[in-house]
Length: 437
Ligand code: PLP
Figure (spheres, rainbow, N blue to C red):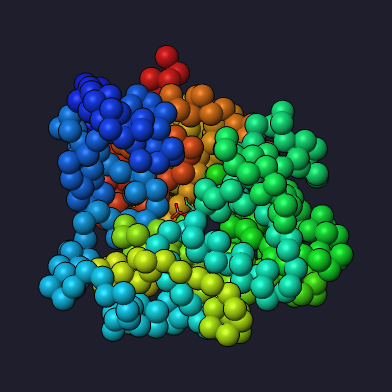
């Protein structure tokens, strides 16, 4: 049964399995970001194209896409073939392989800033490597990050990723907010938090000449699709260059998703370093750090350490090559067309039913927020949206066979075709109508 089904789908088997599994797996889930899902975290049996199939026998149109990676959709043939073939030759060499060189060459060809690169296994790790390079290259310690931006779950960056507004301090001088219990309080040392999309504040801070690096999502996509203000990225680039500060774009979501060259190609602003993950390998645990050759070469002759047993694991590299080769202009055109159809269709439904909602972002990844008047400019605007109503919406959607993230992000794949989009819009209309009742 799919979105058109009139009877609400149920998820009892999933709930039961999560309860049972919690005796072995903490909370029944292996990431905190998969907990507290309404009505329950789900357990899946298989996935194909735009669909997930859960243990209750439900077929769901999927907009989580593994939290972003699956730009080719679930289980694409080209990937299965490439990985199966690589499997015949070995799993892990503790050395180099031809396939990793091919993957690296593709990254360097596709990404504007990528003169040189290294692979890692998660976006969190790639971000750590970038910060280390920025500090080593400048001999400075301070990194600036922005409120609402997420750069992985490690102590030194898990600050002010989603602070409650009443604990966040003044908008122009955010009070750093720790994201986790057990986090070293002094891990804020060497980190400063500023509001994003405010060029003047950043310029002022950089002018002191003591900042090693600035890390940001070039367009906020993790906490909500917030566009950079006109001229902001260009201004940041200029200010960083002037101050001798390394500009790092965290492209873990935007990379290979906003286009083959990521956000930096999309906006025409080239950072010194960029990090990638997610869509780079369509679901395999691959990440990358890329950028100026002189910076990356500090791993070679600058005394900067970067390690990882699973870096450039051959199966994952085969998946990377197969993914990157699939990212054709036609693929992006298809996602552009169908993603736009979905964004516009949703806007039309909200307008028709009289729901105050904004749909922002890009056809490849967009964001829906309830109860705010216009597109958000920064984290605080978005934090004022009606999250409770939005969770009620995604819950109602799920019961109609559409799985969308509770925090408002919608990821598109090339397999979400017109028919899938139209089925989604039927579900959206039904869900909104139910909430109005
Ligand atoms: N940076 C951004 C912008 C992300 O969205 C994420 C993950 O959601 C990360 C970094 C961390 O990547 P990973 O979960 O692979 O460690």
